[in-house]
Image (cartoon, rainbow, N blue to C red):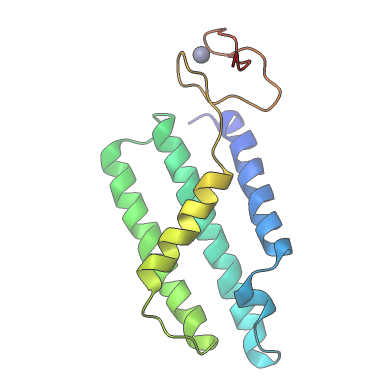
Length: 145
Ligand SMILES: [Zn+2]
């Protein structure tokens, strides 16, 4: 695993998560003051972290760093823990947990869209913002239409 190659991805995921936190999440801003808020915040941060790991895992799969088999296993683990945390957050906030599955899907797909990275049409390599040519195959990355 090439740690340097992962760094830009990790940075952008971290940035996105920070953004989400600052934009204000209902679980955070709507939380009650008092003893529960510290715990809620911790759970919330852990949840964001897990969602980030899920996105990262998907990127790894797309980059071919993780086999489909490993992906399924890791994803299931991350999802299970995320669900548990969302359930705990709901409990602390007094909300029902009947929509857990739907909520995690929404959260993950929202994150997925935000982290959608343009890639080279020729070889599928992730491109960085501002790249005019694919670092892998040299194809032009400028949209022609
Ligand atoms: Zn390319």
